[in-house]
Length: 357
Image 1: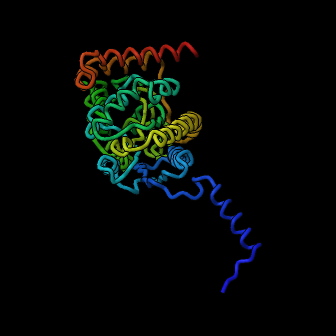
Image 2 (image 1 turned 135 degrees about the vertical axis):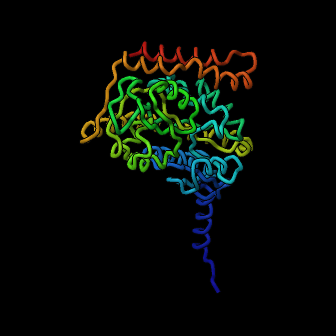
Image 3 (image 1 turned 90 degrees about the horizontal axis):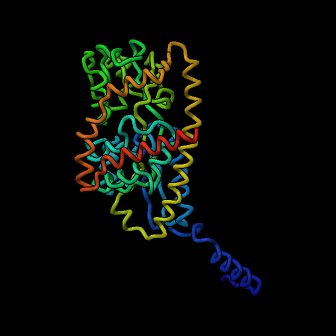
């Protein structure tokens, strides 16, 4: 039979005291175990999402642990969205298409955000004008917007010719998504040119371009490189008509159930991850452009301000705002003239950033 000596007893007491003094994060069992769904293959964004998961565990003292699933491991984009909505998946990275988020067009109305500095202000949690309206949009479908992830501006790529004016869209087959405002904008741009539009999932775009199912698409610098679209496109015009922004969203019922302390921990982690992603995203963009400039068989078409303005004018965005944004904004902000307020604030942000350059 084991006999505990006086020396052994002292060592045991010291060990017990040491264990009691260890911070809770080192020994505590997690109160919450969440899954984070990333439906796309985007290595740069994934680094920020992993940082977020690590920081949530740190700042919550181990009470919340998040397992990150990249590259669509938890399903397609819409499957992941419905999982977040019903609570079977706690958090996900989403594009708020109006087919699933009725107010989602507010996330990326064309010809609003033009650069990284404007994005930082407009999407800032909780004061940014686009954060505010998108929080309302996500609440409507059972989500809470934690933070935003930008990938930069969109241009137009194709396999046929350099696009300098809307007239160059003649007879092209262009791929579009469920981003209704952008679809209507492109329809306006190509009116009278014989251009046709075809809706395809983003994941099928590479193959569709390589097989000639479509001639072109809207695209952005990161996807041209990371998703290898430059391999199947010949021309890319920097129209810069749309700002890419994804939303990191948590199930609303779950969020509302958290204590104030845990909400603060998650928000702190979200702010750090968002700042990291802005910094790395902006830095990576210049590297992507350099790689594309050195790629044989791929041409970047640089538009002049006058050429870009022609695309903006042909977009006829005032009608799109009236048709898509105003009804939804009036429903959720009755009597507040919110359509004009959002546009005025975006204009103010643009002028503020421009004045600092």
